[in-house]
Structures are given as structure tokens and as C-alpha cells.
Length: 156
Ligand code: FES
Ligand code: FES
Image 1: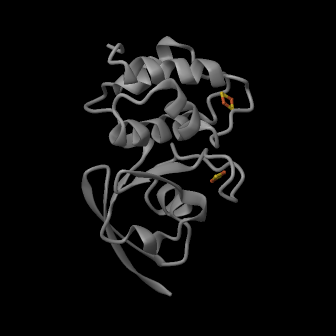
Image 2 (image 1 turned 30 degrees about the vertical axis):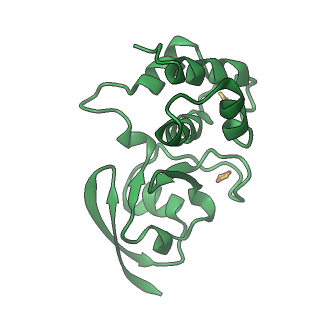
């Protein structure tokens, strides 16, 4: 059913008129022009489409936009402030925590959600939280190192 959905997107009040069953991924990339959130499997299995809804990481490819109504949505575009990368983004760069980069937005956003809930997450907690985000390029160890440095308060 087409209707107007209102939510906060990266800190800004946002309204979009769409089929309320349309997946959030396609509304973000299509109607709202935020293409940082990536399409991978489309079945909730790879994590490349991860966004944050009310401080929780969700897979936007299997989340109808109606589920975002009235909530706070954060995408990869919302992590940098005034053109300055977030500490996690800086740490990913420092640790070369990517190769092709396709999984990176989902990785960074998933890690951001973890650190919102557990700012000083342990290596084991980071591994558990990131386990279902897939990287085909084999950058997992460097990704974990990048997140752990931020969790330890070491990224500048
Ligand atoms: S594209 Fe959403 S989990 Fe893979
Ligand atoms: S850097 Fe290529 S899929 Fe992760």
C-alpha cells in the first residue's frame, strides 16, 4: 500500500511516499539517493546492506520501509561529520581493512552499531558481532583489528 513514511535519516527528518512493503535498501538507494548501502545477497545473509535503526544493526534488504516509520535510521553516509571520517572509518583506512570495498559500508555500520551498545567490546565480542558480515576478499582479520583499535580507544 502506498503511503507516506516519516523517519529520521542521518539526523534529518525525512518523508517518503512509497509502497510501504518496499525494502528499506531500495528506498534508501532509489527514492533517497543514498547509494552507500550496498546490495549483496538480497536475502539477509551477507550484511552488505546493513543500516542502523534505533541503535540496532538491521539488514535493509529484508526490512520493509514501514518498519522504519517514526524511528532513527543511520546509514554509512551518516557516520562522517562535516566531511571528517568517523574513528571507525579512519581505523578501517589505517588497517587497510578492505580490498574491493564492497562489503565495507555494511562492515563499518555493523561495527558502529556494536560500539554504540558496547563501546569497549572485546575481541571475542567483536568477532561474534561481525561473524555474519561476509567479506569475499579475505579482509576479515584486518577488519577485526580496525574495530578492536577503536574499541580500545586507540584510533585517532
Ligand atoms: S544484501 Fe542484505 S544481507 Fe545481503
Ligand atoms: S573488501 Fe571485498 S568483499 Fe570485503
